Each structure stands twice: as C-alpha cells, then as structure tokens.
Amino acid sequence: GTIHEAIGHDPRSPYEDACKGCLELETDGSGHEGCKFHRGRPQIWNKGNPKNCTAMANIISENCKKGQTYVPQGDSPLTPWELLDMGSHLISFNRLWELQTWTMLLISCKQGYRSEEVIKLSD
Image 1 (cartoon, rainbow, N blue to C red):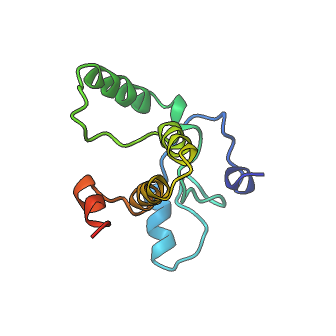
Image 2 (cartoon, rainbow, N blue to C red):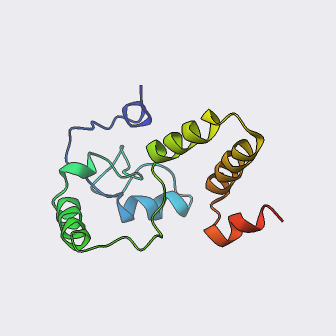
Image 3 (tube, rainbow, N blue to C red):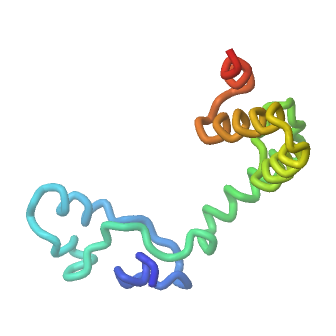
C-alpha cells in the first residue's frame, strides 16, 4: 500500500494539517504521546485528501481564474508529450546532427537549463 495507508490515514477523509502541539512535543524529546487533543495518536503529519479541503479548492479556483489571462511568452516548459514528439521527429532523420540536437535537448531538460545555456552546450 501507500505511505498514507501505512500510517493509518484514509485518503477519503477531510484534510487536516499536522498539529503544532504534537510537533512541538515531537521535537522537544518528550516522546510520541501527542498533545492533549491527540493523546496516544500524535498528528505529526498532514492527513486526509487535500483535494477535499475548502482552502485548497479556493486556491485552485483562484489560480485558474488568474491563468485564463496568461499568454505564454516563450518561457513555458515543454510537456513530456511535446518532448517525445520532438525526439521522434529528430530521430526519424537518422543523421548525427539531429541525434546531437536530441541529446542536447534531453540534457537541457534534465539539468533545467535555459535556452541561452543550451546554446552554450555546443561550444
């Protein structure tokens, strides 16, 4: 199973942050008994499904509204599908130049290079 299941968290339950009281007791070395609200079962991890959290739903909704007016300026990352399409196209030429370009593209994505840094790879 998942880590969540291993520590007894139900992914269908409402989202709850880790308890500050439990965390303080965890770090002061007094043991794992939990605060007065979580005796015997300290809540030192977030639990539940954040998708069901009202605050998270509000944040996602707000970000979607802000994103509607966003116009890419050439600084957007490639999606995995775009990267695979580019690789298939470059390899289909079966020439060394395109293979080198594909290799540089893969390295740049893996290393998180910007376009000006990728250009310097050929130097």
